[in-house]
Image (cartoon, rainbow, N blue to C red; front, top):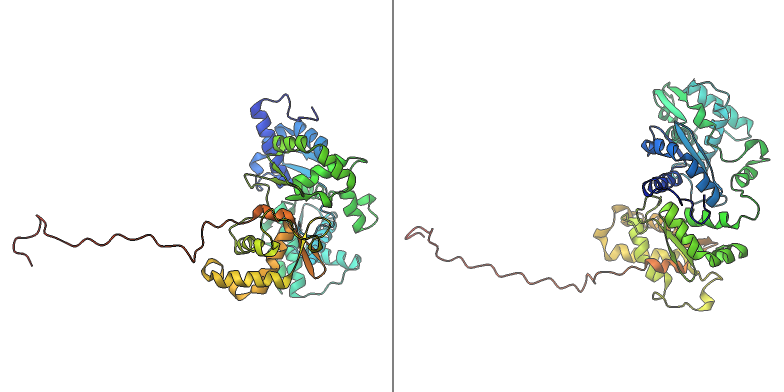
Length: 409
């Protein structure tokens, strides 16, 4: 396999299938029969050797492929708190880990009541305070549902949703032990504590700067030079053209090189877990707010006193609220009812979206907007207040017709 082109030597149709499988695995690192995109698993199995070599050579990821599942071991998000499962709060994540610990000593099937009891016993053993409240039961239920969505748990009879009730109904749960053993990306036996386990999951081979940079290009929407280490920045500047070719050739991503960094976009939007621009109220308000938040015309350089070392411009939550309030008031029919009733919530979600997209960084009481956000500078088709309606033709005056009755009124 050529490092310059991992697909070199493959027929066009085989190369296209490998790219399709690679994109699917990036989107769904745990692929299983019966799950989302599970129909692609036979194709992944057929090309497992090429896929494994490509992920290892380009990203340093390990790929395990069996007949019933495929698991891509990607680097963990580390300290990035924006890439988690939306349905899981921190306590829900804790219950996922505790449930996995409890399941390791269980057989193929278990009653829901027994599983809940074992999970709470594991929580007490780990020093976690357990209280039988609605919030705690909902967190545990969210963890169980997440494991069901991954295929680790199967609701043979009943449902895990009853665990959130005061008197939960009994349910029979089947455990897919093969999938359970593939969940954790880090070696538990080598970890000294939880933080060390996260670090081990994200580790790479020594001196592999290319792994670090390519992972960021593939996994994040925007990569700024200022956010890279010095050796990573120098490597990317030297290899921009080749990396753009590899990303398009192997993963179907198209890159845009800007003064402040690189954006990797998926034209099919399959690899994007968050759409921006998008059709939701939050996405549209966030897009239309950019000109006022950036405070300059596209391409116009801001004053040095207003930006940080990466060229980011500061903005306060009050400023974001002011812009959002004006947009909601100017076009009340364009947004959902939530925008008018919960403006503070919209402001929070707009800021969270910009951070999630890599277009803003939270810092104390201010957020710092990346100059790369100007790439999405909205260009309206026209000013709604000044649009002139097209003249309508005057109605025709009815006249005499051959079909009129002679002498008719």
